[in-house]
Length: 206
Image (cartoon, rainbow, N blue to C red; front, side, top):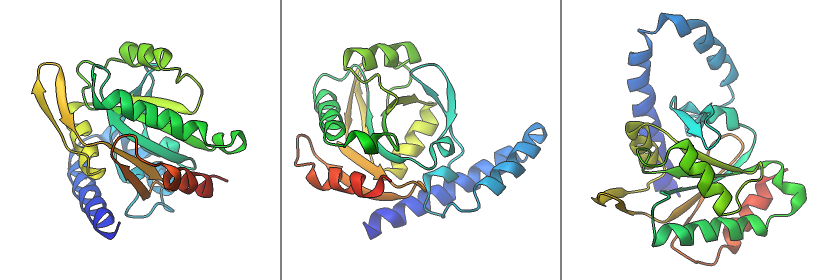
């Protein structure tokens, strides 16, 4: 986990540094940036809430990761046209969700982030969520730009590569973040014993 945190810190520092240069040119958002800095004073350097990327949900709403601050996040990267690993990852996510007590779910978000934003439109993500019975408030599907998706995958240590017009090879990792956006646990593989993951989520959720 120390190696993962070092990689996470390095990626966030690089991304934050690059973005600061870009946003210096955006005078119109200077006030909101000041408010954002005040809001993020309690966020550590390791938090994903330092990332400035903007995402679109399955309901076609724009969201920044920092809006999820205060919830435990359980996150996986998939793509909806996947016929091999992704259905099993989705099943693993549903199995994890089923083991969480109802009293804890209010403070937990289960995120599925697309590695194929070109294909996975909000409409497609919405249809996928319905087909897989992931429609409760706990489930959140996200798509971003290709560059933001690639950067975010690097933060999660998720590798992916397009191997055909409709297929990707990719890591099979489920990540757990605490309320401050720090990575605290990762589960790698398909259909693995998720007891440790579930216990960590329940431990974190208040």
